[in-house]
Amino acid sequence: MIALTRPVPASFANALCAAAPAEAIDFEQACTQHAAYCAALAALGAEVVMLPVGDALPDSCFVEDTAVVAAGVALITHPGAPSRRAETFATADALRTRYELAHMDESATLDGGDCMRVGRTIFVGRSERTNAAGIARLTDVFEPRGIRVVAIDTPKLLHLKCVCAPLGDDRITLAEGSISRSAFGDVDVVPIPAAESYAANVVAIGNRVLVADGFPRTRDVLTRAGFQVTPVATTEFRKADGALTCLSILC
Ligand code: CIR
Image (cartoon, rainbow, N blue to C red; front, side, top):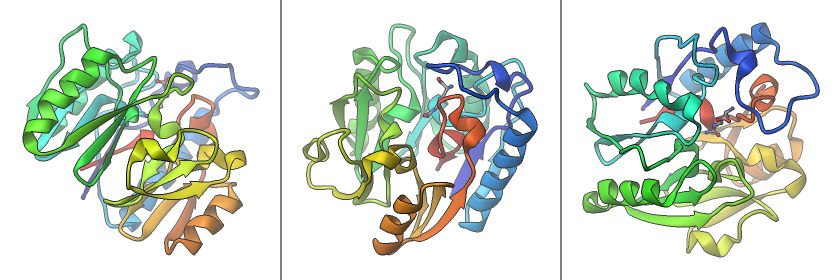
């Protein structure tokens, strides 16, 4: 398992955020948290591959949004936020030797944070960042390769995975009070308390899972569900509307 990551850029203080954080982003702290995240991924058995830093691209550490990888193909996205589109070049460069690349045209928008693969299904959020043409392209690329694409309306969310994340091939986390369970068909759900909805965004490899630090009820729920939990600090990324999955592409 490769975990593609990208360093925190020097311009990270200018990253997009829906509402200005109460406290400014601490760049040094963000770098420390990023290093700990990469170390935690390595401890879970991933080979961490670091893309070149993109100092002129303030959101470039949120590499998840730049590609969707499954079934031997990497679909390079056309991110919904115009300021993020140049992030995709470094991702494509890193993935082209490992995967067949597919691209999207300019009318389509899609963020990887809206895409959640669970076994042979990709659930995709229809959000402000991901439009109908983006979902159509995702479908055109992956359905012929045996992966079903299921769209879910997520009008109030930045991304689908703000409230859920995969736990292997047949289970997900899902924040209570967010999206209806029925949207995910017969996938098993580990409910995350609504008060800790941010922590529903976890990174799982096998029975080990990274969880945002500071969410004890989520840690307990996942421990009871049979996972070995590693807390990882994400305070600086949260200030820029980021969470754990945003910082890597597992492929
Ligand atoms: C953005 O607004 O695009 C970034 N500041 C946060 C992106 C978080 N990415 C993700 O959830 N996949």
